[in-house]
Length: 161
Image (cartoon, rainbow, N blue to C red; front, side, top):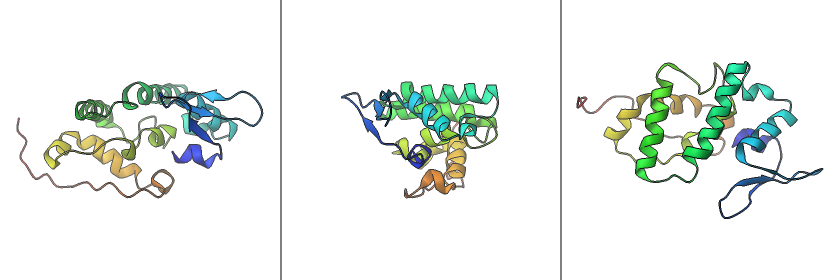
């Protein structure tokens, strides 16, 4: 997670449930992905990463919670399809998950945190997701050292409906 790493803080998985814990220099530790992300963004005076309007901030918070409740710890193929179906539906008329600019949410729910053990035909069901992934992976701050996720741009099969 680039934006969190950029802020120079050490985040560890604190227990058997792998809940992240931020060890602060002056005060108690902070627990939980959404809480840590919000704290670090505010501490770095980069609050624009949480959204620029009240609506964008609420949507960003919603996606942070979605990551915690729906993405973390769900790794079966069925879970992946459910996640991709949710994202595909939401991204039907959007470029970003929250608002009109890149936010912390793009980093927290990114292509490299979701299993892509899908056939080409299965991937075609989620064109909006792969359009979004293809777009955000070109931000060097998001991709960092990770390899590109390759997407086929032309449909290989006719729709089955």
